Image (cartoon, rainbow, N blue to C red; front, top):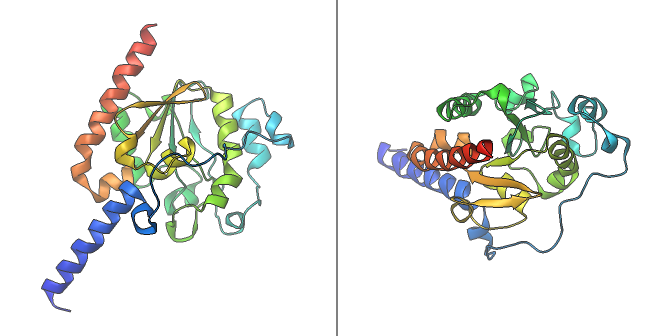
Length: 237
């Protein structure tokens, strides 16, 4: 393969990765962006774990989960980390290889960038709560499937119930679209606060997307400044 053809193909690959980060496969499937119909996220069920009174108890009760095929392929169940009393909760989509190996969310290169973002707005990793929609890594880091998110969402909703954050920051398109039950693009969802069960939900780029597309770091910083302003106003009340 000639160098010129390789460069063209590499540019095309990066372009389509950018489009997927922003819009998912909506453009390719011909779906019209907007609110999805009508299936609300499943609330915690009547299963024993649903009565957990703390994050520690919840983790103990669900860490051996085998409700979907991901349970048989994971190395570690990745529950979440941070302060149970935090006002701020960061939600990504699913663990990656480093997270699966260590059993902790956002510990790879994307996690290191997230730590720097937190430092930039005057927060420490230990002061916030960080988790994902899925608690197990999808093979080859593929996108979570809807059935997997439906299965795992009750666990996330229980985490939100126990923490009662004032702010939820969705990292990337997938977590934002799933929690808000919409197919709107990342671009359309950014730049404003959404209501989610009484919390202010903000959408920004996933750190992994920022590593692939450094030109998005500036708008991501604008998102975080917007969050910090609202956070300071909340603290002042």
